[in-house]
Image: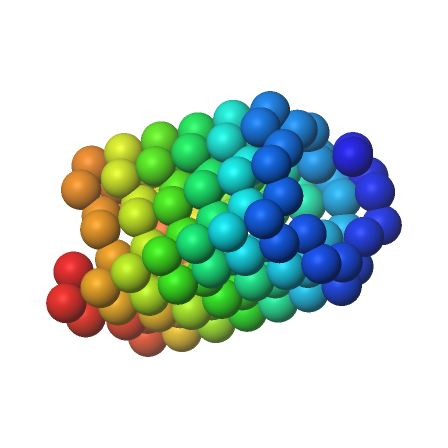
Length: 134
């Protein structure tokens, strides 16, 4: 799926463990309840995507754009989110355990109720981000 143009696709409940989506345009895609474990999304465009309940364990999203994504209870356990853009993302109750977010941006992002144990937020720029009830 590298460099695929799939903007707006309904990929809900997709099981694609280990799939490579590097550089793909996945903006406004619906990944509700999908299993994308151990996949790669390096430099992918996921602006406005829906990740509600998606299992994204150990994915590599280095440099991806997740601006304006929504994802209640999205699970990023063990993921690499280095340098990702999370501006205006809404990820309530997300699971961000042992996840690396070094250098990520997240202006106005909401992580309310998220589980953040072991997450690394080094050198992040997240003004006005919300971390209520974490």
